[in-house]
Amino acid sequence: MARNDALETGELTDTSFYILLSLVEARHGYLIMKNIEELTNNEFSIGPASMYTTIKKLLAAGMIEQLAEEADKRKTYIVTKQGLDLLKKDIQRREMMIRHAKQILNGEVKE
Image (tube, rainbow, N blue to C red; front, side, top):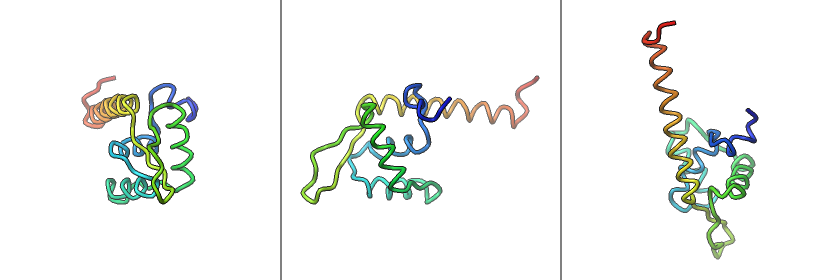
């Protein structure tokens, strides 16, 4: 599956996942990046180019929306219901993948 098709199939890239998670509360770009770094203890970071490319895709797909522009020209975004539903679905998918991995690594799966 091509990475561009991820939103169409309901599977989020790590970048999309963390941006949606960060936008459960309204934030502008710089705060999105900082929130993700804090949330992950600096284990995952997103650069501005990658973040704004992903934000553009999430906006086009209706997963986030832009709120009124602030006085200082910063654009603030928030997750939509559709985006929140997709985020929850992706969390379930990732949890299932972890269960499968643990089963295999713990020798619970017989061939």
